[in-house]
Length: 134
Image (tube, rainbow, N blue to C red; front, top):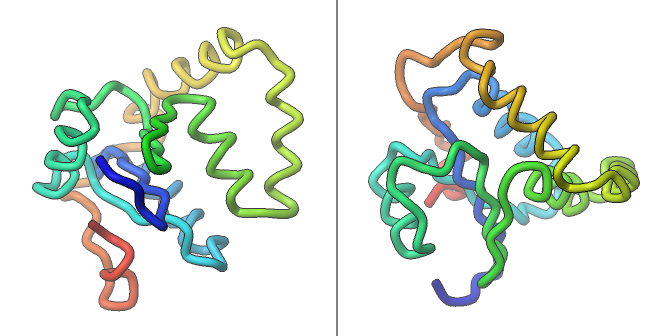
């Protein structure tokens, strides 16, 4: 995959909750640390392939920093840490065993479409956001 100055977030572009999460990251990523790719896009699928992950995704948001791939609760906590204060305070949840954190993550992921809805199309970045999508 090679090293990158950016951290890449691969998300489900058809999931309304996932799109809201991307909007949240856009809103608070003051240093433009993150780059984004919808799993369903050509670049998202290509990125997943380069990362050795299935094109259909892994049922989780994916965070890639250089050669490190994080999934599920580890990915979310790392994203929040990268946003800085006050979001980095959520790092305290790292003391909760991963299995328990991931069980909560999996419950939300399993019901996200039913609870939050599905987008009719993948997220289209605005002209101001375009440079942040791969």
